[in-house]
Image (cartoon, rainbow, N blue to C red; front, side, top):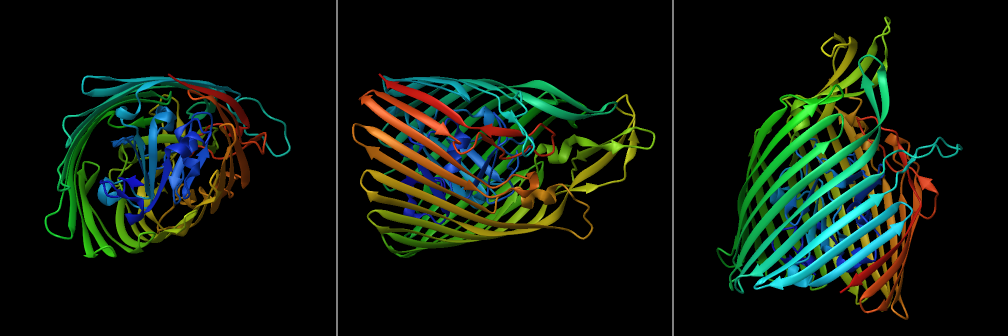
Length: 633
């Protein structure tokens, strides 16, 4: 299998000196998942916690939160990492899953190639070339939680261009309010979610050496939110609100490949994003231009280098609960990278060395080097090791934000005491030095194994330092503000590993198993007063595992099981749990596929994760069943 995420070039998975896992097209189709985050549960080392109907917390190797700010996410080379908070608004990326060719996931730093924020991992979603999606597809799923998900795609060819256009509509039911142990269900959480997306992709081969891709999409979504927010007069206010999201993007890419292996590529994308989360309205424009060149300057060297510029322009409108100052800001990011793969012993030993250089208004010039080596004694076995430096760049909110998090209590004269977290221009990038090693091998024609181990040393991690409370009269109603300012007064160490096994007992039966272990500890500086971000060591499970069984039965029938285990999450009092997903698929004709899927079948509902900083009513994820039909024409 060829992958591209580790080195920005096509290479065999066996030749990658990183902890790389790939979800293939068949894995995606038979997963039973209806959203991109649910698919990522099948990657060892990723922690996926569903918060409510439309929100997930996803991270690699710890530090999970509603905004996983140490995980970079790309869709066809376009970064969907938000520069406002750091992390991903997953409910903006409800894409058709059958258009995905593969999902490549790097666990561990990918910063030398992808830059800041690829600290603990990279997720790269690669969709299918339009040449492969000619004809029509209509899909509809109807169920208990996923009320309706309808997809329509049409692909064809006009002259030298292959293209596809698609539309998707999804409506999902609300989750349940978290109940106390032994109590009956407290009813719905008013967080139902609707999302509509329209898009296209066009590909053309100008010559055997030149390829052009143009793609774009627009979306609109709305979701309920059971919000608990501080109030300067009432102290605390609970209300049901509706959040709105809409956006558009267009991306173009030209790639030229010569017969000697040299490659040149240019990519540009423009992204418009608008959100109204009630407590904060935001409008953001992003333009990104990137150049890349691969060549062999001499025997035994394979060099990839590139440069790029990205500009973010935003306009915010805040409230008492959340605001930024200044409300509008233009932030430019300048990048360059170079990586050389050196063959020390042909077909046996290679060395990879490189660095990324970046500069923006939010951080000084940053260098992120890495050194990797891979030993391939045979075609079926490889050993690799690496040392990397990676940075997590400050988000806009780290520098300019103010967030009223919760009501602490009341003063002697009955004024509300409200805690706030306030950004600081003195906040610097977080730093990681990562040591990794791994083994990847085909032990027999029916058995393969992938093992990775890591030891991470973090410094200058985000903290919230308490200051003396004061009387605030700036919002019309006097209250006592208890502020905490963003700083870099945490350090940490994490260690652990992941293992995945792929085994075929018989040709029709495939078993896939994954297990991950994480030991994360965070230590405040001696002068730190942080009690918020130091809890990050308790926001990810220590143990997680899954087992998938994919069985082909007679008469074009498929029977698939996924059993998952997630250890306790101490920060949110989430108990460890097992869950089971079951899918039965049947193709009565060549063009028609029917399936019945049950999700989270071991419990009526269960608690997975909670929102951080902003107070919301915690939700439980319900057992779900849906039926799906896919017709190709």
